[in-house]
Length: 317
Length: 317
Image (tube, rainbow over all chains, first blue to last red; front, side, top):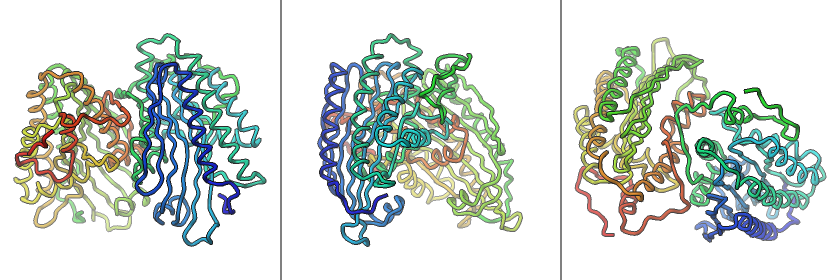
């Protein structure tokens, strides 16, 4: 957590996030080939607002790409939960969840965010600020080569900025995207980081470049999976499994995801927060996939600590 | 909360709850006409267990009737959240959620429960104990006559036991079954109560009779709606709306319901806790029903404090 005066300007960061949203929406529309984003511009009564964009396409069944920049007063009570004292905050970010039609195309989530706070009792200009973000993938069926590709792309982005980032932020994603009540990871993870600021010789500007590189890595990675897998044939069983896995996605987001919970409990804009919900999710009591099935193999790999960059050994069914 | 030595025996309560589960399952099977309950008997590694029963019928699309009786050590940390100190606890109850096929049949929830605790630092035999429970109804479309019937049945049960119960426990349900992020009640409420024990001249035995009467009121009330509405024709729009309302049901249970959250965070049996999930739920970004439509009228009535016993005035569309 940095407490230095800012050299980077928050409007500069905000503008770059808007451009990122534009770029991602454009690339997703091109890859989808049919769906067009619909935009809702909204204002937050207490300060700031956002641009929520949703798509219903031929490859992406339901997707949201949300930009927001909100500000105002943060009460001590809430600030304390974030290990700060009350003050004037500013928060901006881009947040994405895409649910594809085809169960062989993975669900993806990306978020980049910037937060700053002028605590009331801190000297004026002594601002706390940080970046957060990440990309994680939730395949309905885990394909080892796809998982390897995904993690290799993330590692490339990380390595360019810091040799520790991939290992650290990959582990962070494993721990964050985890459903304790299912003892399952949400998917194959990815990278996740929070409260990044100038530290260990890395400047705020360098952290910002890392965050933006993560943001710009998103569309090429996901459109690769869209193009490669959207036309693959799938069976009824695979659609059924997709709907059950979406149920797990709902469980994670509503029960465990800190961002979602925080947003819903602090009167955020509900429709923008819940853009992450799938178009349809199913639940079957105590559903157990057949031993050795593709579904069972996927379940067996929803574990923390797997090195996806290495060749995986499939369990014998 | 009572701290008197028990005259009622916990095994007596437990047995009555089991018989209640049997009776309800039987009545639901008869009313459904096709579905049969499948039972899973399970043990809790740390003490106790349960009988989870699920049905997939021709009227009830997915329903769960769960009995459990669990016991063991409760750590200070968790006990403190319940305003107690750590000790040996015992908890038993019956919990039900039914999702019907036909959108004109309402979703229903019922729960009766008993809890006792021997705090480690309290004199042996000085037991804290209470009852909790309630029934609430979530119609996909609010029918005023059905709502009136439902609340009249509950009032009858309440009035038999205490003249204050209906008003108090109806208000409690309005407040409990509420989604702040939607500014909607979950449905038309019903009754909800917690921590009932001997007080104001009402004995523990009398509270127990009240709880059991609530439990036995459940099946006649719900089978009345099943029989009356299951064969009514419905259109695609009504099915679509049902799936969206089930989405709200998921949101309430996973984000706000204290029982669900507590269960998932304290390693309860996940499949039994999540028996309340619908077979299918849908989300559409920012769905707004047409002004004056049946859907809009239902939304306008998802408010706290409505006296359902009185004739409702419909808003002009």
